Length: 215
Length: 215
Image (cartoon, rainbow over the protein chains, first blue to last red):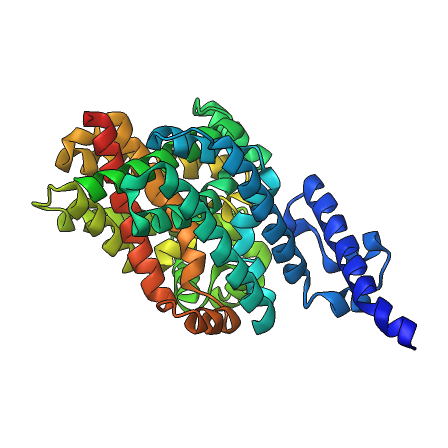
């Protein structure tokens, strides 16, 4: 009994890790919308009801994957921003590092419209608290390198990064019909539209904040 | 026979109008995701198969509603921008006029991620062509008032308006769980987050474009 009780938290952590690893693997193959709780459970080798002992919903699993990816991105970004000080360069590094992480972009894109729509108050509370920490960290990284942006400006920029990524990501993955029409219209490919658009919009956002703050 | 043939285009136009009007009415009550083709057909008083004689899918109906709303918004915006010349004021008017049109914001938000995902090449071609005209018109309205933005800059701004609206809109409609957590965290209400965020991000975008173009 004593032994069982002592093992439980470790077992719980192990199960949660297995579920999150499986979700991450499935997300590398296809979009969030196409991964059901049944498929996720089957791939972990647990009953649906058993997965729901560890997370309140399929959406809560994906929000936790998002939380992990967000932290990993910021760890990497901190290194990539070493010695970068010009606003255009800082925003460009932020954009390029996001383009290199399609899984993060996909989850950010589904965050407010899909993932947050089916979680308990407790899950929402935990996620929003950690999201606030991540956003604060991004704001801090930007402000250290671009002091002219100001404190409120850095927070606005961190928020804009999420909003612009979320709004632009669906354009990176058009259907064959839309992709064909875009080719007919002479538009660059979807991946390029996403990469150049994200860079352009983030650079303008940061340049605008600096111009308004100092102008 | 002669009579029937002559009436047909008019009948088709009438049916299409009835379907679009019904879709618009349903969209005033709830989000796109919650309106099925069955419900839409029932409300028009047609069989599903009959609705599909006039549009290739439920998504094609909503894209056409979007097209109409987009044009109506630009008509109104043109008047509201009369005599406005400062970049901050221009971007603020654009933002405020979008905030006053939740139906347009809802459809723009679903455009690339949902609506464009289930239409034929023909529908996609028609929609993209008209979307290009609308975006060109917005770019023109902005460039007339803020010449410093340049031609490419005005096009970037018009694209950014769509992307930022799409990315921010889901935050305007949180579930009760998320809304409660945001209140606990001392965040303003969702409607205010959307309105102030849209204004801030569009103003920064335009200010950044002007600063980069002239700086």
